[in-house]
Amino acid sequence: MLRIVLFLLLFSTYVIYSAVVYSKGTENAVSVDRIEAGKINHGKKLYQQYNCTACHQIYGLGGYLGPELTTAQSDPNRGENFMKALLKGGGPRMPNFHFTDDEINAVISYLKYVDATAVTYKKPTPK
Amino acid sequence: MTTEKKLTDSCTSDKAAKAFLVLALSYLLFGLILGVIGGFQYILPPFLKDRLSFQQTRPLHVYLVIAWIFTGAQAVIYYYIPRIANRPLYWQQGIWLHFMLQLAVSLFIITSFFLGYFGGREYLEFPPVLGLFIFLSWIPFAINFFATLKPNYKTAPVYIWSWSTGILFFFITLSESYLWLFDFFRTNVVRDTTIQWKALGSMVGSWNMLVYGTGIYLMEKTSGNANPARSPVAYFFYFLGLTNLMFNWGHHTYIVPAAPWVKTVAYVISMTELLILAHLIIQWRKMMTDAQKYYHRLPYRLLSFADFWIILNLILAITISVPAWNYYTHGTHITVAHAMGATIGINTLLLFASVFYFIQQVRPNAAERRKKMAGIGILITNIALLVFWLSLLGSGFVKISGKLNNEAFYLIMKKSEPWFKVFTYSGVFVLLGISLLIFASLKALLRKKDL
Ligand code: HEM
Image (tube, each protein chain N blue to C red):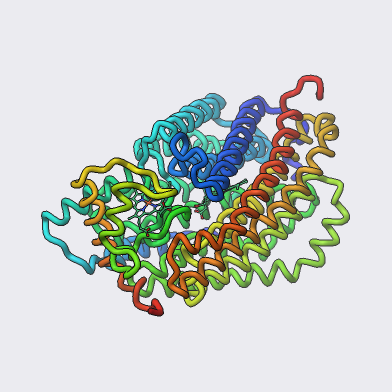
């Protein structure tokens, strides 16, 4: 009996905890206007459609063959133009996806947005 | 135990359990081959770049090896259930329905990867509609499990708790991992990422519950000692594992800007795993003497090697769950060492223990004949895996040092090259070792002559 009670207790805590994580625990700190939001959404869609996640990570999610992209936008060694160049022509390992300029801009909008949210990731970086 | 069916008695559902096992072993074989191709793509960038790029090999590898883990666990659970319940499976056609659904879904997933249709989510990289079919395919399994066993949780042994938890949480976490389909979740990257880590972290916990359950059941069967499945200590560790399944996922999200308490909860809960580690180390001497005593039994040998990997991987997991260290180790191949170390060293070895036990029960002569091949396979796998695991750690350290010195990505890759070579070549031996286990099992299961 004790075990059943213990399980139910843990499970209820899990349900409540999940609800709090879904809402208060993950509130949006970066707001964007409607037009930008549309581009970000498009960029994210492309990111998933081309499975960039197989080679790149965002916040640790994804494979390791390519560089992690969470803070690529604000990285002094990389930044927007560098990213655009790779998206346009591919690299030694990165495929060329033959994106249009619109698509490249959408992907960049998405990565820019991700970068803007990455406050805890950037803070302790020894620069 | 006396109420249990004699284990050599056959059940009508055994044929289906065997079919599941063959399917699971095929997933493993193809998954391994794709892993090795992925490894070569690390050291030879142009290798198959245009025909089968890493964009495809990684999801194929990861999907197939994960499918091996849950299908293998389901296969042996289908074999164990009627024996534990002492009655035939509740829904005989259900197991075949499950089989057909599972086979169809996996063929769709593999085809979509080859054709370049992706859903693009970590681990669930296939188009989202296939996630729904995975969900459906598990329903007959759940019905057969609960309706055949009719578990009485007041007295149920730990493995029944473990399996029940695994099934329940698989449904919960699979659903959770598709919350991104709703705008409320998708449009906020912090929420989306946190929940994806939450769902995946606990989903891995749910397979572990299935696999560990089979390990504990086997321990009870092969040692004739009920302690691992029914003592207060056993239940204590089950609940500790459950707490970790529910709350420790936050250790993946230290870098995500979610609320700080998510990380504190995860950190505190993750550190309770030290208790598991301490327990294992205290038991080590006894484990070693038992392992020597029963070394001639294949399942026992596999269980003992898995114990070794549990200890190594727990040390690694606990280390990378400390936020100050996680900041450096995350995003490096140390995480891959953790993921593959656990899925190969622990899950795969535990499952093979059950596979050989199954074979010994249903085809004892065939099992005896394949023992040597399997024994060599076990040795090669474990030695190669140790090298494989260490090489991933090595390349992880190269990356950490590169990040600290602000080195460019290509430079870090260049410096990691020797480690990647060791990784890929030892991966070939992991493939070889596990293939021996696969072929020993398949031959014993399928060859008429061996009966
Ligand atoms: C039973 C055998 C195996 C299992 C269960 C397994 C499991 C996994 C898992 C779970 C991942 C995802 C890792 C992560 O995201 O952190 C992975 C990735 C990978 N595995 Fe395996 N693996 C196995 C064997 C192999 C072998 C033999 C090789 C050969 C070299 C290999 C090569 C790879 C590669 C290249 C990746 C991708 C790493 C990346 O994300 O860049 N695997 N494997």
